[in-house]
Length: 150
Image (tube, rainbow, N blue to C red):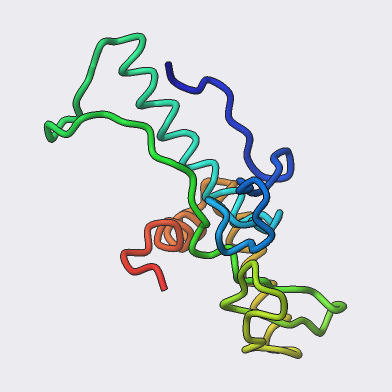
């Protein structure tokens, strides 16, 4: 059978443990931060899996339009999950990139008022995307469809 229940964002456990293994790096999915961007990426994987399972189970479609077998994909560590823009007041913030499940990983690469502006741009573009605005949709389309995952 295929899974029929999916959990994303804050409602999930955020990782897949390896029993009796204490090293996060050896888990199938190390803990994923419960922030908005990884939740959006998890949602995309869940939606694509629901669409594939619907085609397989209810419509009898077994291959994609390109002839590849339809198979649900497994969850993975979202490429942008290690980026955090943290507000430190109205005129201050910090941005960390490259963080992962290893304690003290990541690099603070922007801070102070430039990062506060960065957070304002992120917020304004997300609101515009949700309002179906062209600028927000264009920005976030390319964020979610980055051809190279760093």
